[in-house]
Image 1 (tube, rainbow, N blue to C red):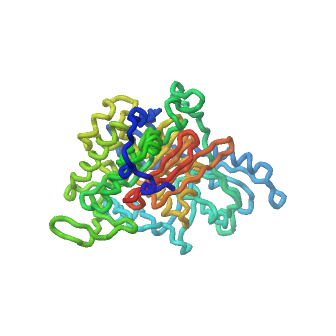
Image 2 (tube, rainbow, N blue to C red; image 1 turned 135 degrees about the vertical axis):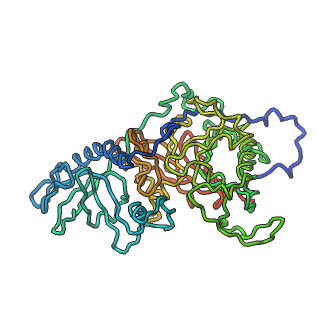
Image 3 (cartoon, helix red, strand yellow; image 1 turned 180 degrees about the horizontal axis):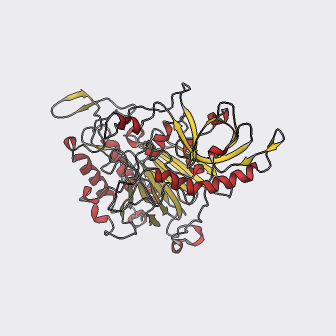
Amino acid sequence: MVKLEEIDSLFLQKPSKDDTSSELLVERSSSSYHPLHTFALPKERPYKQQFADIYFLRLTKIKPHVEAIAERSWADIEIGGGSARKVERVLDVRQGELCWVAGTVYMDMPAKPNILEDVSRDQWVSAPTTVDRYYTGSGTDSVMLEDDSGRIRLTGPVLEDTFIVTGCIIAVMGTENVNGDFEVIDIKFADLPPQPQRFALTKEDVPMGGTDSNSKTGGKKIAIVSGLEFSGHDTSYAMELHLLLEFLLGESLDPATQESIAQISRLVIAGNSINNELREPAAGVDETYTNSTNRHKKKTLAHKKYGYDSASYNPLPAQLFDEFLSELLPTMPVTILPGTTDPANASYPQQPIHPAMFPRSRVYTAMPGTKTGGWLDNVTNPWEGEVEGWRVLGTGGQNLDDIMKYVDSEDRLGVMEAMCRWRCSAPTAPDTLWAYPFQEDEPFVMKECPHLYFVGCQPEFGTETITGPDGQAVRLIAVPSFVHTREVVLVDTETLDVTKVKIVA
């Protein structure tokens, strides 16, 4: 980890007598960038269709891959003199007969929100979720496997050692017991999908020799930050935000560090850039704030109601964020994913933040109707694209945060790996993660394996590399929330190695 305070400054050094200004000029590396519009929704979006279509589409797309892996893995399995037989439907399992079947997982949890209960109470709008975790550990939670024929309950110790949540597609091998439950012996997932070659979409941008010919260090970097949360109420971390801007611009740094910073070809902001609400202070930050009318008053938390609240809207956070972008954009392209606190739709996939929110910076956006991203690219959440030749999949964090409520674990990287092996970036949508009711396609299914998968607005930084059966390699990154950690992530575009930089005032 590199701390900004450890970087030497030139402020206290004697000016050089030699004219070396030409040598100190540093040019920003160019960005090879091809956004995909996997999660873009049409302007006219009807909500009259059934949400169940999402599950049918997901099952149709992933089930063949799960069954293929299960067939190869369990073809020679024999227990008690009998081999495992495939059954087509979950209701076709027979007591005492070793078999396997594929279907969709459904988690029955008392603490989980239930839309049917809301309807029965004549509540036309579902209440916001207030529980931190659906998993209780009291034995009341149950795992179901369902398809178009019906549903069967799954039991067995193997379920406790595997990440499974509502909406993921699995194959299970076992037998039905005397209670009518399916005793699971083994579980299989679809595993990682096929992975495209680097520069599959922008073949014309392949650099000579595999490195950037304009780069003295031979490689570029991608900066990823999340949870900036520009606020009109809290100024306790305004200095860190300014230092972050100076760091990305290379200001007040020595020439060697400026040359390194110049290799950052793009900044990705992964959610929660704007926050109109009062919130908890960051760890180690004084809980008091000062204004002209009330000094050193304790912060009070505002409860968010169904997303945007016009009565409490404050334009200052958006103005501050716009100023931040307007100073950065002349030297660096920026990709912005919306998050839970940003002015975007609450349901998944979130659509881009409208450029009208950025009157100073919107001149850098692409013309309406163009498919290529502008210097300022407001994208969806989740988002998929090709950056420096690598296929990238990123989210603002809602998908991972919702899954963490289902499991008795704090292993967020493990859950990110599970999502890749489930081939689904948002399995709990639309059950507990609000989503658009798709009818013709299920965009949350991973059709191609990303090289880089990041999730923003996480409580702490984490990274690891996972591999697939066909040589796929995925770099996982849990991007920490800047407002709580003061950290930004740098990814080397040649090796996909990750460096964490901490901004300290």
